[in-house]
Every structure is written in C-alpha cells, then in structure tokens.
Length: 481
Ligand SMILES: Cc1cc2nc3c(=O)[nH]c(=O)nc-3n(C[C@H](O)[C@H](O)[C@H](O)COP(=O)(O)OP(=O)(O)OC[C@H]3O[C@@H](n4cnc5c(N)ncnc54)[C@H](O)[C@@H]3O)c2cc1C
Image (cartoon, rainbow, N blue to C red; front, side, top):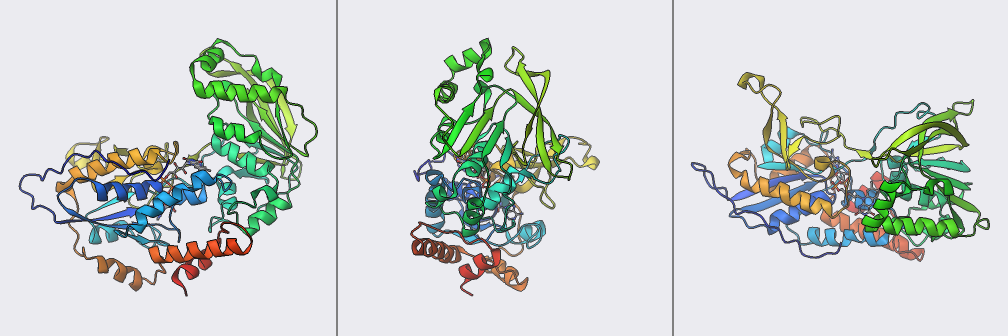
C-alpha cells in the first residue's frame, strides 16, 4: 500500500426532517492505529454539508498502533505505511491526544459531554487462547507478548527469557512466521532495523538452534502469504527443514495448488526447500504440517520440556482428522500464534466469543431494552461506531482497515439526526478537562519531537532509527519536559 489518495464514495448527507442542520461534527476517535487514522482521513475528505473537528485519542504516547507495535521490524516496506499515516496527521486538521486511556483517563460520559459521536478503533492486542494441557507452564508464551517485546511496546517487560535451544511456534499464519523468523534470525542481521537496544542484546544472547513451526493442516491450507514464506529461505545461516511425509497430497490439495495462485507459489517454495542441501547452518527452522499440538509436557520442574502432537490426515473435504498417532519433540519454550483477540471497553458492548464490539457495518449495537419489548434483539447505540480490528476481528491487512473505515464513516454521516448533543462542544473544553485531571497527554508536535529523537538515536549508531521504549521517557521526550 502506498500513500495514494483515498477516494471515498460516500452518500451525501440527508438531514432528517425536523432536525436543525448541524454546523459542525465534533468527533472523537479512540485508537490512533491505521483504522482510526483512515477513518479521520476519509471523513475529512468526504462530501458532507457540515464542518468536522476530530480529536484522536490513543493510550500509547505515539500513534500508528500495530504498524509501530506489531509489524515486524525487519519489514521496513510495511513499516513505511507509517509515512502515509503521518501525512494524514501532518495535514493539521486532526488533534492527536496520546497517552490518554479510554476507560480510565476518559470515559463514555466525557465523550458524550464534548462530542457528537465517537468511533472506537482500538484494535486487538492480546493473544487468543490455545486450550491444551500444559499451556500455562513456564516457558510458554503468547506471540502477541513476544511481538510487543521485540517491537519495543512500552507496557511490556524490557527483558525476554530467551534461554531455549529448541522452540515451538504453534500456528500457520504470518504472525507465526514473524515470531519464528525473529527467533531464528541472527541478531546482527536485525541491526539495520529500528529494534531497541534491549531487544538487540536479548536476541544476541539467545542460544536457539531449532525453531519448529506447527500447523494442524497441510502445506496447501496454510494462512501464510507467499512473500513472508519465501523470506524464511533467505535467512543467513538458517536451514529450512521440511518433511517429505507432509507432501503426499490428496485431490483437494492438488486442486488447491492448480486453482489458487498463492497456494501454487507457496507449494513451489516449499518443494524447492525439499531439494535444498542442509546441514551447514548453525540454526534450523522446521515446518511441521499435519501436526496438531495436543499437550505441552512438563520437564518435571514446572517448565516446558516437550510438545506432544497428533499427526493428522486430510479428511477429503479440505479439512483434517486425527490419525491417533502421537509424537513428542523436546522443546524448552513454546509460542502460541493462534490469533489476536480484542479487549472489552467500559460502557461499550462486547462480543466475548469473537472479541469484537457488536456492530452492523460499524454502527455499534447493544442488547435491546426489555421494557420496549425487544428482548434479545439488538438495537443501535446511537453516537457510537467501531472500525478496524475491534469491528471486524483481528484478521486482514492494514489496507483492509481503509474499506472498514469507509463503511463506518458512511453510516456516521448518514446518522446525523441521531448524534449526541454535547453540552461542552468547544475544542478548548477537552484540553481543559485533560489538564484538570493531570493527564500528561502527548500531541502531534510531541510525536514529531519523539520521532526526531529516535531518528537521532539511530543516526548516532549508524542506524535509521532506534525506538524509545519506556513510557515515561516517550512522554518526557514528546513533551520536552
Ligand atoms: C504481529 C503482527 C504483524 C502484522 N504484520 C502486518 C504486515 O506485515 N502487513 C499488514 O498489512 N498488516 C500486518 N498486520 C495487521 C495490521 O497490523 C492490522 O491490520 C492493523 O494494525 C489493524 O488496525 P487497527 O487500527 O484496527 O488496530 P491497531 O493497529 O491495533 O490500533 C489500535 C490502537 O488503539 C489503541 N487503543 C487500544 N485500546 C485503547 C484504549 N482503551 N484507549 C485508547 N487507545 C486504545 C492502541 O494503543 C492502538 O494504537 C500485522 C499484525 C500483527 C499483530
């Protein structure tokens, strides 16, 4: 994705009969990740007959969400999307309030007092559960925690226990590949990236020799993308190990290879690895397909000692069934990369099963009022909208948050008649509220300060950028205090 212009196709606003036309929409957006920033951009560019004034809140002192704190540091092309997002903020018509947490620093009643509506774009930051015995042992981690560590997220510990020689990564999506790649890669090969100093030190000391990626389906059913898979084969001093027993394809798999270009490319890559000579590298990255983890085995001291998995086989309908054959592999650490999951927000409905805010095309829904006879049914929660991963669930690329935002913004505009009527809509009233509460918020100038500071730290070491990790340091650099 590039910084191309966003061209929203949005219906013109229709003022509902009997309502006084609005002159200005005061909008709060909670979450300054791609979804929140695209929503602001799309609204500002949309055809409408009212002015817009947008305040963008984020609980982190820096904007960009998972583009800064999820996308792997050795993916500079994707990290570069930040430039497009920064262009949006730098236009100067969106106020940024970083280091402000919805739920503690500000709550729904505050938003109702100062704004006509709110869009929640709070994404997903935690790991989905993997319910197998032993998953709670020491040495068992969630991918999201590890990603947060290597991407220098301020709310995670500075040190990471990289003491395992053999590691399992459970999952067959791109996050599993990110985790496995960062674990297997030599730390010096990450020095061209923006990784913080503590991450470089941690990875340098890692004794890892073997990283095993487990997927319960076959090679033609993975959720990887070809570019990310191919990249593994280019790692210095790392052998790619694939197992011949996983390539005995059935008809469904053969059809997938011949009918789907992505599958075709990935099958080709994997088959090239089958032919490669191995044995010279000091580290190995193994891909185990048709292998369903069923237990993490205790080493006798409460730590991860092995992974037990069941071999699976194609069920003839594109899925797999267990074969009953159980295997065990010694490992000392396991990372589950089985998906991210959204977090509930105070006063906002939450779908516990899917980890999203219940919504209809971005209009937030809540359980119907029993007194109105609509028990069980859902009704729109006026003035409240959702977009991005918290709306749709944690799947899809950054680009998808753009189409999400278009849909949500279209409804926001067309719902004009049902916006809130705030008692203090003036822009100054928000800064006054935050100041009164003693919240050390960061703003766009503050982000520029931090950005320049990180670039300067990098330059001093011959690198592009070195991230600042501690929250208080991020805030003091931003606020120049
Ligand atoms: C490990 C990983 C790697 C990825 N790599 C790629 C890639 O290479 N290419 C690609 O296209 N996509 C990639 N993605 C997907 C991409 O990151 C998402 O599609 C995108 O970030 C979702 O955007 P969002 O704005 O909905 O959520 P987020 O990016 O998560 O942004 C949400 C924002 O809300 C803020 N927030 C949350 N709760 C609160 C609160 N209570 N109060 C205030 N603020 C709050 C957060 O701090 C955050 O800044 C990756 C995702 C992960 C997890």
